[in-house]
Image (cartoon, rainbow, N blue to C red; front, top):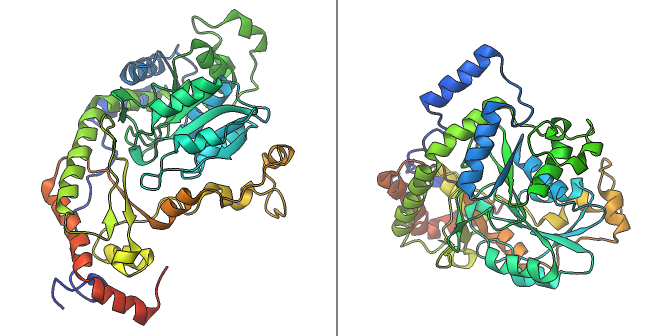
Length: 430
């Protein structure tokens, strides 16, 4: 078999070079963490810990938001946002059905009710017009997700929230540094949560942070998610002091990850720029590929690339998405659909006929009279059905690697007739 034959059919694979190891930690970061371990300084309870104060100050400045609260995870950051905004007690939160589950479970974990609006079928981002149709007298907030590093339409969503007196919450867990209308995501919301686990753009081991323009939101979040509510820190509100106790979520940030956050901030802008330049090279090299299409973005919006999303055209390809992804995999390209199905169709959100392990939100959803189906969200279903994602930790500019990556897609494109025959012969369409 020649190199032009699909690897799936016995040919030689393209085998594009892999992305560099991620995360990468500088020698300074390693030295600082090593020193903490030598001293046994692995616990920090508040801004009284130098490393935590340093990280929170650096993040707040970088995000352009006055207050930052370090947390143990992105989910903890989002939950802290809801706590700080006092969104609970059956309040409705309009959100997206096309995301990772933590964007929704934070709502459920604070005894609130997710209400799902539809998305843009190209990007998977929350559709402001659909969100506007979901507003009721019980709506308290909108939680928008900048999925894959794509900035959502925060101008429209902020206006919608202000028009109805709602809180706006941003999930920027995949979007550190993304820009909408000239401003970083995370700076539009009343509170915003970010994940900083090892696979994210701002990567540590496992961490997160909440940012907010509101001092009261910061302190209320700290009251319920940090050791003794950070009540020993300067500026703690006296009106909250009677409520200080240890009935808290253990969301505090480790000094080790605080150091990594501070150090990783030094390189994230350069890494994001390299990711973006690599996407530009890849887009250009993909000019002859019609089986997939990459989204485009409005002027003034600048994504960051945690993952690269694209949309599969089954009519053009003449094969299933599963067969197409399998052919790419044989060539050495790891690609997959990130969201398996719209979240409102998931079994643990049902309360009628549910036979699985008990979960804390079943009673809340039943009391609210909510019965999800997902059938009223056609664009989310469409995005799920045709979306293909690739991890994009290409943090060093590498035009040759991008062209090699694109050549795998071009090879599959040129061999679509053979791939169609393969699918018919094997009966594979998964």
